[in-house]
Image 1 (cartoon, one colour):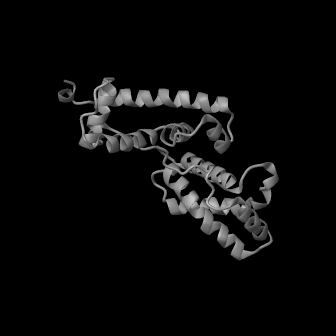
Image 2: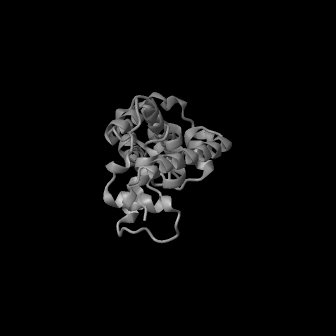
Image 3: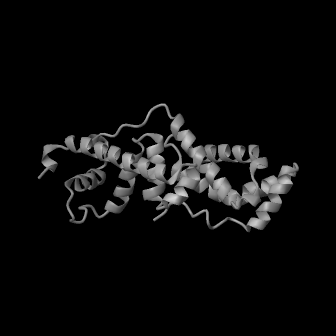
Length: 212
């Protein structure tokens, strides 16, 4: 299930947002505050789902709104893009910039995993169709996937986050990231290959007693 509400469901009527945008462009602080209040839940959800692990949602949300108001004069409703969609694009690309700015990616070792995570990953590596052994495997699977994604390069992590965790279409991802649809597909293919390499490496670290 998607972790971020679809931007196709705007937080307020787009006509109201358009009026506030025009007033905010003229220096109306009350209109600017209204835009932040209405759009904050959308921006916060995007920041929470797509942020670097070491960065707080609040800090990332502030960066997003700073960019939104710096670029407010660039938005035109005549372009056919609802304002909430435009903000979601800025938020997503701000998250990607933050991921790219991380100096190092976390490392994951088998010994560092919780028992249910290790059991779930062992099940994944076994390529069996049997149900995962742990009753909490659903949460373990989500936690493990987030950890695995955090080990990927930023662009790979973002495309799989949007495609597999948030279940967005290639068309939506291309619009959010400013990529072509073909680039989204190629990046996702390469990202999955890298993810498989990470899983295979972890598989080699399994203690012998779990191989039975």
